[in-house]
Image (tube, rainbow, N blue to C red; front, side, top):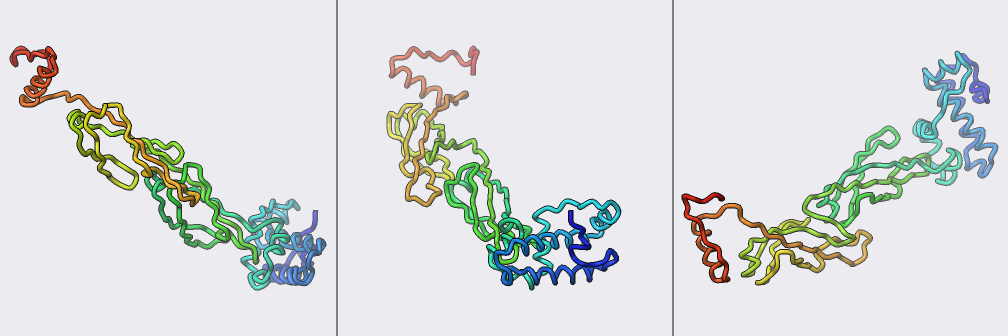
Length: 288
């Protein structure tokens, strides 16, 4: 293991300014523009970066001085080095910066939750990200039709190290909705239709992700029929000009209470249909 003080060429009593000055000299000496593709220069820079990170941190330096142990250095710590010496690293080519820092620039992962409606019709969101210690806002356009578990990549929206810029990965979680069930790009929903509308036909209002919609029910429609609405489903989030359908599953509800007029009308209808429905005297009725 290298001795951090030896790496930087400074005494154990060196001040923070002396540590910084020593590191700057090594960084300039081993700049990729001066020594492109030189593994020895890259190795020396990495050791100097690690020494700088430890000796500039009061707690880490104290532990190191007392125990001689090398505190663990995360790769993301080297972002601090790039921020502290922008004048040195700002001109580096992306590949050179990636090589020196031991990998590509830092990608950022962001988890985002959407309502079913937002996922269905698409939405714009502003994301607040902490990049290199400073907060920035990134606008994200979510295309219509995205599914739960979708991952969106924004190139160049991650953290920057020198000239290398990482990407932003947004993981989408789509909440379920009791009104809709998804099957590919198709949507399934249910509509409760009055019995009279099934018999006589008429207009009923249904819900769609974009808002209410009035549809026509033809006379004689059955209670378990399905009305298929072409191209009222989800758009293809991949940008292809395709759209699913919406399948409206019809149901009817039997009224639990009737007015006197409704009861008389249903009784007349039953008589016309040849039924044997005979209403009980009102005072002796056992059921409502």
